[in-house]
Length: 66
Image 1 (cartoon, helix red, strand yellow):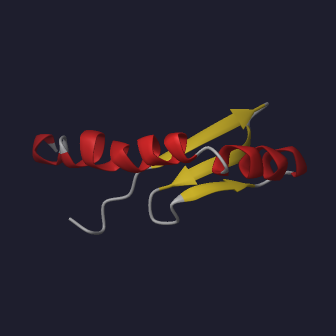
Image 2 (tube, helix red, strand yellow):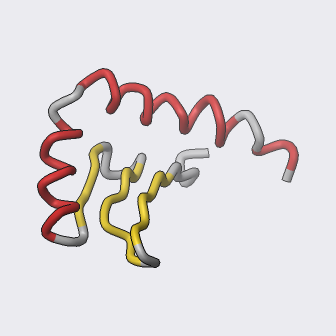
């Protein structure tokens, strides 16, 4: 169960500009705007906690369904 990964990505114009990865534990930007936004979102500890909890709430809950 440790290899389960939760990924939350944002796209604009078919280009991924920011992603939260449960293995990394923070947002990572892939464009100049995404890097700036990742710095802002990573300062919000409550949002980071929610994203980390989504791995258990969403991914691990549904593992038996697949």
